[in-house]
Length: 351
Image (cartoon, rainbow, N blue to C red; front, side, top):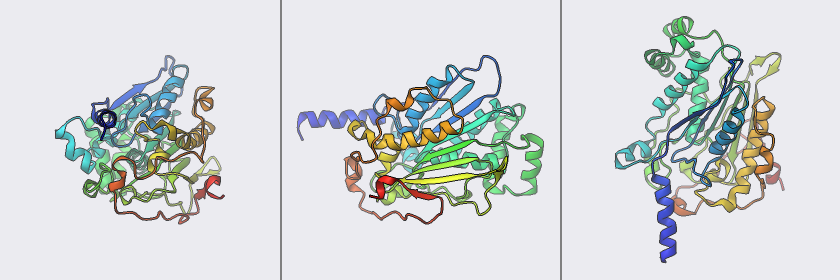
């Protein structure tokens, strides 16, 4: 390996493993009218460094910009980060997702008021987390601001884990939570069920975290959108799709919307996690623009010129499955497409 190649490799690794801030909150609401709460949960080893953002990170930056002139509060949660060898097993096994969901739930509960709107976004492991968050809000409820203590947050989550339909859970909800909270928008990029580090061998130690979560969208969610990677084959990235509600809930006479769009590309393409390989950004931008179009139609405030910033091409080059560590993922299988009526093939796949 030449000197320039070694520099490039070590540069990418040092960038990947350096410490990154886990939580960022931004937005202004000088006069407290109805707020839009935007929660974005990113994938493992995600970054907000320019050129290294996932689609979730880019969505956060756009929403942060838009929040300066709107009643909007934006919260970003990075995925698990590797800051040193003490974090190794946390990253490999996907530990910490429970605490992460509780942290976001508590932050939302402490700021939410009736009449506010909620928008949720997530990528990969973060997609699983926001889907779990929506389930927690649906089954247990959202704590009233004055009830959002650390103890109540833990108890709410415990009820969600152990027995969400129990009498004790119902009594807790009645005593501490808002009567009903709706989620205006849930948008996720390529949800995976193995939640730890996606690297050869060690991915098998990742927690498969679906013991108490429903595949159907939470009944408090008005609109759910899922961008899926049609060309991904690595078993470590097995997708966790939604299943349609047999009786979709109604919101003002409109049925719950669920659409799962299969896009060309792999897991990294669909989620925009390209490790700095920016020539492939046009394919990733196709899923970014699609998702933000749906969110904007649902009422999310975005900068006026946001579309012009992202050249999208669903036929653009893919990062593939064999770049970097990818070639060492030997277990591969074709993804099953069309198992649920909510699934749609992108036009680029129909040629």
